[in-house]
Length: 104
Length: 412
Image 1 (cartoon, chains in turn orange, green):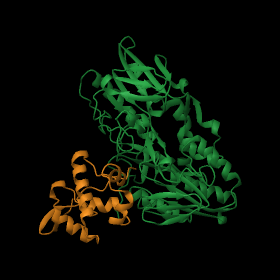
Image 2 (image 1 turned 60 degrees about the vertical axis):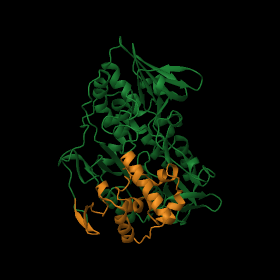
Image 3 (image 1 turned 90 degrees about the vertical axis):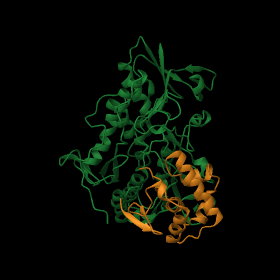
Image 4 (image 1 turned 135 degrees about the vertical axis):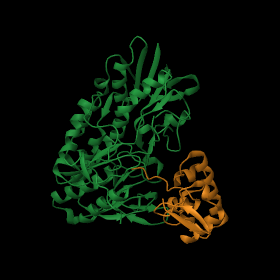
């Protein structure tokens, strides 16, 4: 696994830049990750990111857009507005979680 | 007397009773299997029906023919499982008790879950994931005069994830053979980033779409179908117009799973992905498509998992730790049209790669490559399904995936 330096900290990432260690994520880091993909984090973004972090801690896998809608209560439409084009991927990237597995 | 109850007499449930009956002492164990009807469907055959390659009657047989002596087949609709009381309630009021429960109730397409998708079903909107839908589509294609054909995948996971691509390749071949390919514009619409989930296969299969002049519309998460205006609308407000839409609706596990409080948000039963034991109840397993394991929803996954399941089950009921660990192994033939096909072989951790299967360097099947032999393999498989697979006979294929014979490509 490659190691990269962000905000002065060494973090482990996969070859697409997703953080691989749950505990290496911080809210500071999230701002940098969001900026990397051109997203300015509003309160609503943070609510979703916190839901994703908490849900991952419980479930052991990244919530899908469906789950963020049905369990988290954030409508899919809004996810697309907040994280344009690829919400599932972008939400996971900023929240420091693995990309949700598109099951083969 | 201990009771084993299996819910669902499809691929996985039927294999389970065939493999377990000879190994559970008849004086000590009763086995009961429940399904809502007595018709077993060879679901891989649906793909061929729209193009007239298979006829509907060629893909069904009575379920009871595949249930061995010493197993009771109960026909009835399942209302719900009451796991606290170790019993299952049927809609007609019957109750079935169990010591161990195996949920094998599969997954089904649910067009009702996407606004507008069901409105024109059978008109300009079709699906081929049910026998009824595939048969209707065959009728439609007999007289369709061309225009915009859109093949659209709603959301993963779906049963047989390669079938939408196969349908698209076969449609291209079908219209070419009918001499009307120039009057059909084909678009493949998917919520994935490319033609398929995993990079190497996605590149190979994406190239095959390009060669066939099939447009790819990736990252398209459908919000609704506008049946009146004949267009798909995505959550990010893109639109794809169609004259004929062939949709793969979202797939969900059985509703009784949800009613029983045993399902996740898609009604799949959460299980340990290596042993298939429920994460909530120590006497419930879920096999085949009904579980939430991160593998393909496919008969081949059910088959490879079922090679390991009986040993685990026998140990578990004796209070011993389960020793066999399923790796998510699957392989699928992919029809590509004009009498050719591909084969892919993969598991939880290894994506489909090129090479030879099952014998390294020899094959006879080629991985991720179009050959005539792969196509014949696919056609032969129907015989194997009815005569070897469902009865629980050994197939000469290892249960766990092997890297031998695979070429690891550098990703560019």
